[in-house]
Length: 229
Ligand SMILES: [Zn+2]
Image (cartoon, rainbow, N blue to C red; front, side, top):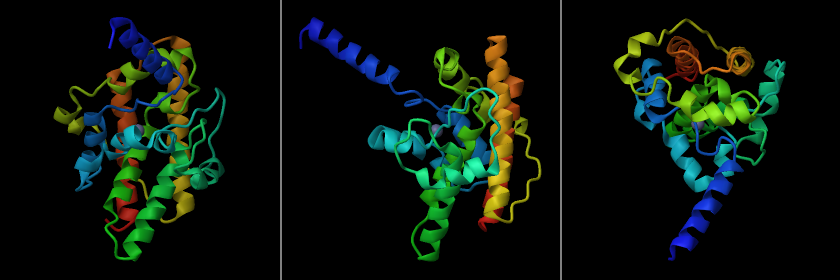
C-alpha cells in the first residue's frame, strides 16, 4: 500500500470514529473490574465483556452503554422502563438505563431455563458501571468529545490498588420498579456532575470519580442480592 493510500485509510478510520460518539469509550478496563469486585461479584473478571462485544456487534451493542441527556433533564423511573425494549437495538440517543434491566431480565429467563446465564449478569454489571461515568449521561457535544477519554481513565491506573476507596452503602431492591428508581437516582447524580464539569470546564477530581464508582458498586451489590447471587 502506498503511503498516500495508507494515510487515506487512516483519515477514513478517523472519520468513522468521530461520527460514532461513545463508540469506543467507557470507564477503562481496570475501573470496570474494580467496581464489580467491590460489589462482591464472584465473576468480576467478566466485567469488560460488554466492551469487547462492541468491536464485533458495533452499534447494536454500543448503544447500550450510554444515554445522552440534555442539560436540565430529569431522569425518572419511567424514562428507565421505557428504554428496556430498546436493548440491543440501534438508537443513537443510547439506552443505557433500560439495558441494565433488560440484561437482568435475560439473565433471569436463561437461568430459569437451566442455561448458563452469567454473561447476562456481567453485561448488567458493566452497564451499572457505565451509569456512574458522568459523560455517558450528558449530551455528546464538544466538551464531552474532548474530555471523554480522560474521564474514562481518571482513576484507572490506581483503582485496583484502592478498592477500599469504593464505599459501599446500603441499597435494597425488591422489584423492577425499585430498581428503575435507583437507576434514575444515580443517572441524575451523574448528569448533575457531568454538567457541572462542563460549566466549570474541568475534569472530575479523583475524589469525585471514587464517589461515582461507589454508586455503581453499591447498586450492583443490591442487584446481586435481588437476583439471588
Ligand atoms: Zn461500556
